[in-house]
Length: 218
Image (cartoon, rainbow, N blue to C red; front, top):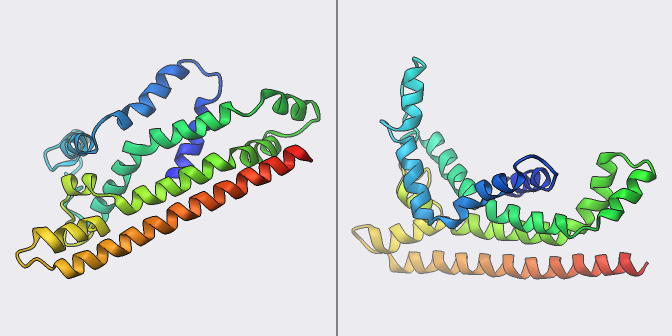
């Protein structure tokens, strides 16, 4: 999901639009903030007496427990994490887009290629190394999510937003009875998952780069 949002945003910001530099700064700004600061800002917005419920009240609607309802809490934890880090992935994809030679698009346009054909035959293949990096980094970030969840919900309500790092923290340190063995086992699973994702990223990147060199030689 984050990769799709980042790709669409990068494609838009790569166009010559009014205020392009300003919008690039706006999208990248959350990356400069601490995840805890980002989560605190959104908690202020989403709390029972927060900004979002104030807007709903002004429209005559009843306030919603955005962080106390399990389905909404999960959604907002994912949303805040995406919002906080999407600018970084957008920047990676934007750098890849700007590295694509403009004459390729000009030649394709002269040959009568449609916008979709130019995107599928030029943009996607040449952007694939960047997409792989963003995909794997996004997966690693999703596995490691903790700060936003800890501040927003603390893993609740119930266990609705208890991701693996939150589970390790609660099991090994936060609960009255510390289950160090279970926390250590979960930590090992997390470490192995990250190792697999890292190896996958390296192999896919090498394969993509080798394919690009093969097309250039051809």
